[in-house]
Image 1 (cartoon, helix red, strand yellow):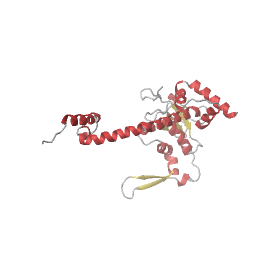
Image 2 (tube, rainbow over the protein chains, first blue to last red):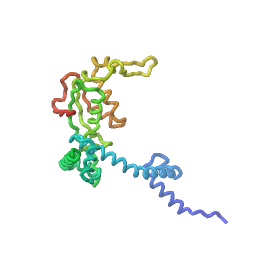
Image 3 (tube, rainbow over the protein chains, first blue to last red):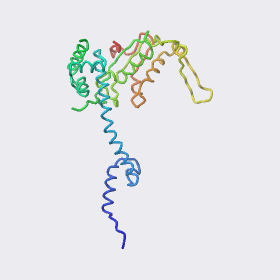
Image 4 (cartoon, chains in turn brown, yellow):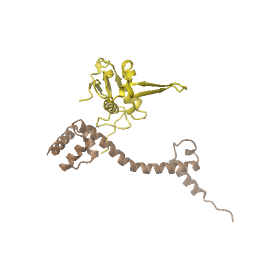
Length: 119
Length: 142
């Protein structure tokens, strides 16, 4: 009995991988054999870096808050400590956005933190 | 709401000035490097150059603690055998005081494609005079 191959299915499966490999360098975007490795690797990094992104973006918010509250004469740690004392539950993302778009509101928060620390 | 990221096209670079006389080199260089990187602004974005211009005057009057004036060495090497040269801070202070500050700040900038652009925004002068009166720089240290 002749060997049966399922060519349409194989072609479909390989095409799917090659489509994801568009724009890759050289063989990696043209030959299934090399594209598969590159796509697997790329997806693994994409998965890991989506998770890494959360901590990196939080670090960025903290850097921004620190810059904004140091201009008002308070360090980041002191500022957050003051806010927790008066039960302000704004997260770092909102605080950093306030510092950019609503500097007056942010200044008021810094003043409130200062009075909370002094008390 | 998405985190605001600065855009190259819309970023504005301010002008800052600092008088180096009597200040400790490393402590001053941190402040300068952070201003060049834009780390003192709430819009700081790592992949975009959001920093300010920094004018330094009285570069020759910057101080070093301890005996680094004589002991701190800068090494130069052309690549040829026997061409390893050492210069102390004292050697530079008279002839090229700008180098002392530029070198210290350069070492504190990130090693990436933005850093060379940041360094061009640092202008160091010996003496009180500088070329950037027209930009009306505001004080860097308050």
